[in-house]
Length: 178
Image 1 (cartoon, rainbow, N blue to C red):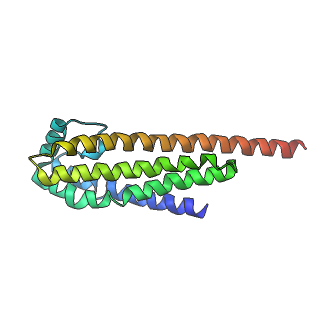
Image 2: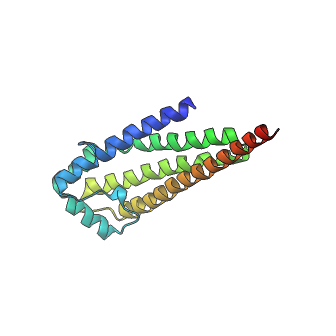
């Protein structure tokens, strides 16, 4: 339980910094008058990526590359540990079966997808205005995988939490009825 709490705190800190601090997205939005980052898009074409990067302006692109991207490499580790930690903890209390251990791969693959997305975004930011054709396609696809696997991680935790609550209430019913 201690690890799950530590992973939760670590994730919350990084989430807050990357999304709501002056060195994160909030800082970027002030510079760009509301133009946002590719990381928040669920799929985009090369033209859409170019338009978004253009909307950021030179200062926004530099901020994205030097402030947000460096935060966005450790951030996937924090959410991977958060999701995997809670999945592992709930599984430990629900079942002794090892067959469910593969659920732990979902947040790991989400984090890997996030890093691949970041590599594509870095390539686009460094080469702007001449975006490498592979970069937008790779970043977009990896971002969609990241979003999907993150949503799946959350769904797995919710299902496991309901199973845990159900099992606990059933145990309490047996104890009170005996």
